[in-house]
Length: 248
Image (cartoon, rainbow, N blue to C red; front, side):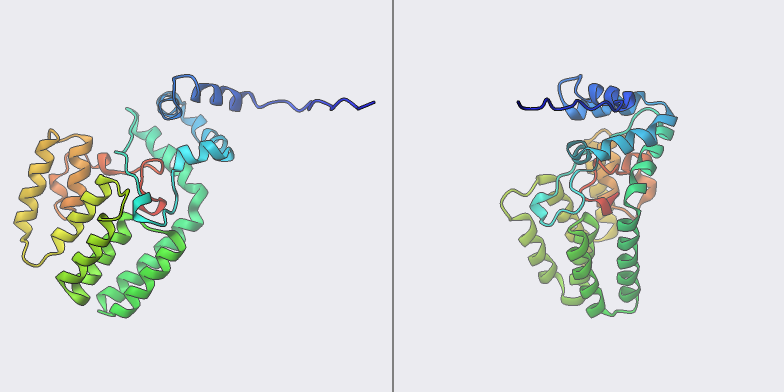
């Protein structure tokens, strides 16, 4: 006679159970996540992050694709912010704390690249970016760095050729393609700083000035002009919004 399987007697975590129920309560995981973020008490934030990262489907929801390998895998959402900035920063700090080794590795590569760039050691720059991409995939930072390096090393046609290879691939999302175009455009020696500032202002005004999309796009188009950004926190990526972990 087949033995009956014994039921687990361990207590189910009521906090985890409540959290999962809230995630599925509003007709979609992302709306559920946004509701949770807006209602959490500060002391609940680290535990919430621990629970979400412990379940694979919720981990993808919270951090997206950590290290996309191809440009057509990059997807961008505008930064999500709740009315409570302190809770937003605590959320991101708790989340990024789980990936400190990956972030530290990226910082090492970035520092090596920047040191080589200041010394005009373009060979080391290129090998460092290659290693970084192999280890951490693509990011907007990496695309911008490659375009700048190609402009300085090989000129305008080389960086434009790289850009075309990225944005003409099938399935590329229009937002990262648009931002990559700006990375290329602002390194063009024939384009003045004032021209960039004027065009950034036009884009910002098209989104209503000081708004999340207006400030967000301005930060990429004209990053040197920080005074044009009305609310700097609009430009801070959360790990669940960023194209890759290294863009947070």
